[in-house]
Image (cartoon, rainbow, N blue to C red; front, side, top):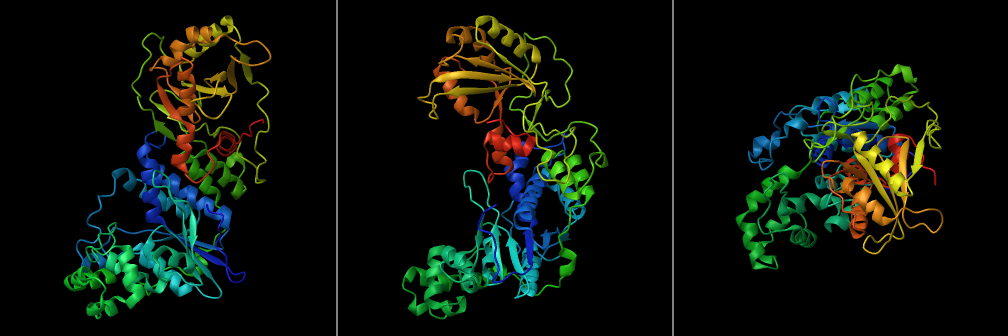
Length: 518
């Protein structure tokens, strides 16, 4: 989350109202389509994304009150007044529909307030709680990326946009009244008028065709409300604007009604019912069932649960991402050995080795972290042809994806020289191949190409790495082309939470409970 934390004019409790429906959509399209699921194939991407965001909110801001608000399937007054309202949206994907009961279960198990009112849109539920409860004794923060909520911002109500990843990345940020002015060019009280003119394509609110955000803001700044603008047609600076406003006046009025968030809805849950307390021990059980390793550990620690208080799952132990080519086989290899616990194979690759079979942490933060490699770790050096051949034999016999890494002389892959290569097929083991160290023995690049080159170039042997594109360029420049790339932990981290650090040491710490040795 952003470091720009919500603050109050004085110390006072805060209520966070989370737009659960919007957050679920965002998480689904960031992760759900990537195949995040349990071992038995249940999609969990939206649940994981929402859980991560809520957990981050609770850890970073420590709000006294929090509620997660969802839409229901029942039509609202907006649908009754305008049949085309949101009609441009595709049906909710089946894989997201399947996660809605899980989202509700997660929120109530936490336990947090779960708000959903038939016939009332989540926007209006959030708006009603915000306006009716905010004041000198309570600050309200609406957690949403929906610009419509800017109309409600004042000294006691602000917006925390959780951001999003992908090509159109948006960093998490807060919007107060000054931020709304910077965004729209008008104060919060006039945002409704801007929206009524420009419309909203995401909700299929028509607005006035040909009047965009900048023009709408200019008209509102100059004339004021929508009705004042419509009453001042003869003073509109451009004839084309005036003609459009006359032709679409009723449509603009309709749009104004659609974008106005209702703030007088009954409040089904009192403020006391939204108090945030210690997570229930059952939350760790839920996260374990969803196969969320880090969240399971953190929830158990926060609840003060003992390791044996959380039942273990009966099958796989971490979310999976479908391999780009799950049907790929190694034609010349013998049949794969039985799958080792925690070693993925057979069409899916574990997103992270989450260590769910390890003891859960004590309530003391960080007490469960491993400071050094396990004492039974097996790390080997292949600095001559004999060592390379032993390494190649082990790689082929492992029948597992191969993690690869390179040591280089610089950060620019088009210029850096290759210093060494690392290989691993399971935890606690690894091989290092030095090729250009100033001290100690080095394997010749010719031998590396001869012995390891065929394995690197075999598309049927999956390769994984951290920012593996860098390694691919380096290796290709040194006549060691790589095929069969199946997974990149940095890309996976970005899909899970675009706003966090994607450095390998951070990911090892956060996902595996392991602190890398400098």
